[in-house]
Image 1 (cartoon, rainbow, N blue to C red):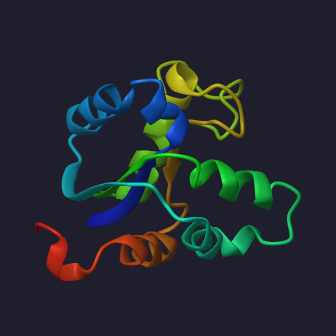
Image 2 (image 1 turned 180 degrees about the horizontal axis):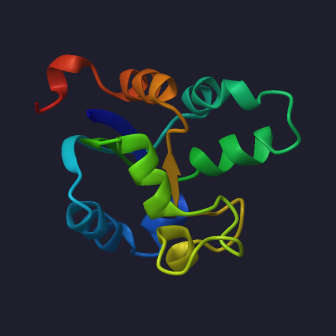
Length: 139
């Protein structure tokens, strides 16, 4: 069943010149790109996006990092998109990520881990709506 997921190419990957390689991987993995934006996420928006982590030790570092420079936000579609994307990106900690995954190849550490991926279909819908209105998606 086709569904959607949100992907973010994070500031570390953008700044290190990995964006094109990651987008190429998305295409090779047969995801359909429904929407794409290049933006610098304002701190308040980063805090709202990651509100589920408010109160956790890493919240301030995460939101500061995500608002530090440009990101590329993508709405993706594929059969079992959330699971498929999470398999492609690998474990949050690149040391534990499988060989060949995006995080194993491009991530520096848990904090600078190259990409974001929705963790459930419900969160994917919320996250996509956070950055895109339905009319702006190519379907």
